[in-house]
Every structure is written in C-alpha cells, then in structure tokens.
Image (cartoon, rainbow, N blue to C red; front, side):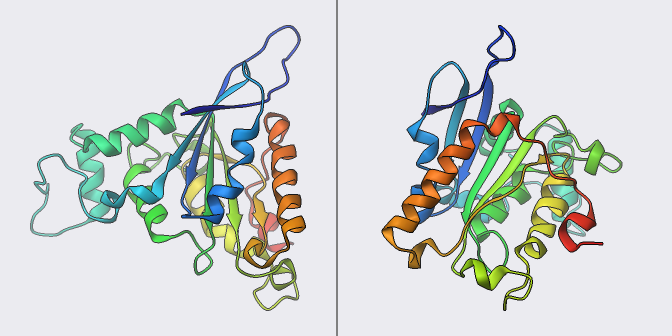
Length: 240
C-alpha cells in the first residue's frame, strides 16, 4: 500500500519521488516505521512498505527458475546468481524485489541490530536481490555501482543504550558497525548513503522517550530529500 512523504517543490515544479521501506522487525520495528504512515501529504513521494519478515523463501537457494547449476562440479553462490541474472532465469520473487529497488529513489532499511549486523532474513534479501549484474559488476562497484543514482538509509533499533555505543562505551562507536553495512554493502552497490537513523534501546525507554524517537524520525522524514549523503570514506567511520 502506498504512503506519502513530504518533499518541498523546487521553484514551481513539484517532483514526485519514490521510496521503498524494507521492514524487518516483528514488533518494535513496525512502530518505528509508523512515521512513514503519518504523513504526511500527497503529491510528494510514493512510499512502499515491504515486510521482509514474511518472506522465508530468501533463506534458501532458489535463484534459478529451473534449479540447474551452471557449474555442478563446483558450487559458487555468487557465480550461480550472476549466471541466472545474465540468462534472465532468476525466480519471479527476486525479479519482483529488483523491480521495486529499480523504481525507488530512496530505499530505507528498518531493522533491529542483531550481532552488530542485520537479521538473517534481511541478509538473505541482500544476498539474493543485490546480486552481481543487477546491483554491481566487476568492474562496476562503489562509485560506479549500478545503483549510484539512488539513496539508501539504515533505520536501526538497538538493544543497548546510546552510552554503550559511544567512543568510550562498552560496544564502541556505533559508526564501527555501520562500516560493513553502509560501505561494504550499500555503497559497494553504488547507493548514496544518508546518515543513519538510530533509535537506541526503545524496548527499555519510557513511553515519553519512545514518543520522542518517533517525533524525531517523523520530523526528519519531512525534509529527507534535502539531505546530503555522508562521505563514504574510512575517515567518516574511524576518524583520521
């Protein structure tokens, strides 16, 4: 079901932008995605909210329609996915997800932090959908990645508090765990990455604090199209 986000018109023109939100969270994550539905006015951007949690098919090998390996003597998932893409034999569910990514100007990933990474089902979505040929090639990655005209944003909920993810916190600076996700996955495919939206420990926060998290997220979404991407360089993550 489409939802809308505000976008300020440029001059006399009102440009329509398409956003895709991948929600991978059975409960709290849906709450954090609510600001996307609160919005905001029509005529600005189309927002499609996709529930990755319902798609167990991404957990198993099923990239080729016929299931025939291009090299049965030596299995390589990356090679097989690439061959299936080139032969246009990817399964319909993967093609459908790639179509949604292709149509989107902004892709927001909403998920809880699991072991400093994404939940397994979202990792499976990335492995299957952002395959070689569709999202990147060799050469054809990072600034030359095939999704270079799109924006991406990670909206994350954590179990730990903000203090735990500070420079002197027990978990270290939160930017450390963003490196493989934002740089190694999204930027590798060419995405221009916006600063993450991190909601620290909503499960243990007070009702007032959770409302503040929601309000902050909703306010940011009103001007999301005016934001500049972060510099995808090691210094942004690790300092000089």
